[in-house]
Image (tube, rainbow, N blue to C red; front, side, top):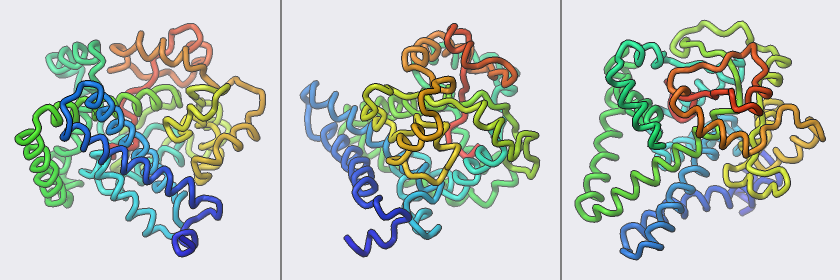
Length: 338
């Protein structure tokens, strides 16, 4: 254990880091094992939830790796990050691509993307109609579309041509494993899809209300945003979205990702120190904190408009959330480098 501890960036990180990593791996593997090994409805439901939440924690551990918040050395964070991309299904992108996009988000104080899918949807009303139906049914169609685009982009954009072999290799491995699962345990394969959609829904719920940033489709270029380096703008347009402030342990459901103002204040602070940092920088001021009830209401009401709408960064987002008039953001996941 001492040798592992010496690799970690923070001295008190051993138990939280190992705990979160083991939980994500055992949740993923244990959940999948339950889906394969049982036909009992309650156990199948438990396995689906375990699998989904294992992927949720894996995603936020990937986020920790992107910020170099786990290990001292960059290469160790990259190795762990690559491993977590396989648990989360984001391995069609390289870890360095995921990290690059997320760092642009932090440095530019904007949502920097490679593809303006909203304009494309407006030009393809048939696809948009299908997405609206699926989103009405609470199927995370926009996220599924972007995960599909993650596979297709190396074959559509010359700047990503070098990723073609890697993408085909990952498709062959993951696709082959899923076909084998579907052949040997079709119910498990079906529930894996359900678990994956639950996982995407949790992540997009958390992403939807943490910023009312502008969007710039400049990820594959060098152009930044006019808000680059503006710390006052960053905090004014960043919002914390806890599950509960009264019972903070509930925020471990998303590995404290909800303390988003604290995270943007000091991005390399590890997940288990974010509640203390939140209290330090926010205190009793809840101006940038959105109650869970407001999040649920807006997430439900605006799930169709959110497909195309962009939140206006010049408006009073916090007031609009309280009134149920805000829309939030879609398609800003750190899992997809596009």
